[in-house]
Length: 226
Image (tube, rainbow, N blue to C red; front, side):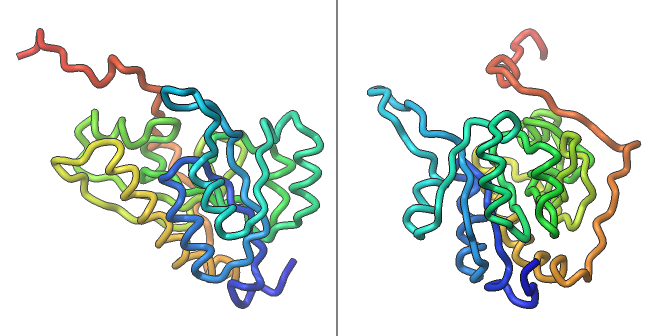
């Protein structure tokens, strides 16, 4: 493992895809961490012309001169796993990546795989934490920095930051704000985590709630109710 007394000595692999993940990559880069690779989803067709489009994270990584990797899977692609092992990261930071990380990868970095999840875990685990919080009328949500394990958002928590949900906020605006908070939280916590000054706290299984993949109908108003 690298000398972890300063950011420039910490070898980071970042994994993310959509624009909400950009503040996290940007913060790591600006703070001087040694970002040795960025993993993001493959280019896909988008827009009316169905032109191939790269992810926002890929665009930013290339602008910063960071190597980009786009495996279709880390679970079934042995060569992709071997390349990640070869990079030898001290920590993997995940923010809205979209691919499953197998146990071989979870156990690879000495500082673990740290994930930014936009809810106050263990509430709202799963794929739609922000929309579910809004639909259920939660007054408050937040962001969790947690260490990934083989479960779904079930790993121990390094830190959390709560935030009220504004009356006019929607899924898009709230998600963006929570990931910006997550980026700030990561930069605050990562040095102490690397210096072994923070203990990750197991989640309270008695308080777990699970979200599901939502459909368009979930956002429709039922006019039959008064």
